[in-house]
Image (cartoon, rainbow, N blue to C red; front, side):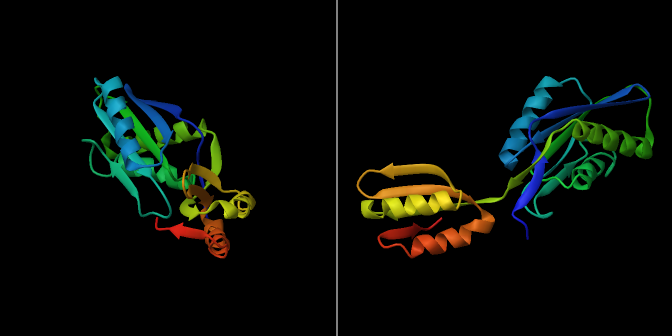
Length: 199
């Protein structure tokens, strides 16, 4: 399985109107469910007078971590059409929230599906889509004489240093793309005075 994925660079907006109802869509890049919760709480505060805050998100690899929410709309009329747009753009680590202001005329399930899908699509059409990598964190401990070799291997694997502590023994946590993680662990394991720490 590939260790790259497509997501959006920054938040983007969309808007769709139907029979007086306004559907305001906001798309966000997200890394965790906690981040999703924070964004939803902020939007509920910002659009406190809106009737519905429907959303869908997808995080991580495959289709294991996703959620849809119709927030009071008829079942499958809001969250699923929003998720459908995330999937059709082949995105992950993305949250789309569509905020509805009711216009007084009922749209029916078909009308709602079209409205939520179109609003979500509008938010993605204005987004900048980028490719990123799924990363793995590796923690190591080593002694000073191994420093040059360790730093050389980290540089070669294009790993990013997340934290380092050069007090008594040297400790370091690096982040490297999944596809290169096994190779880096193997190379580091062959260096004398280097110990891979449990994740």
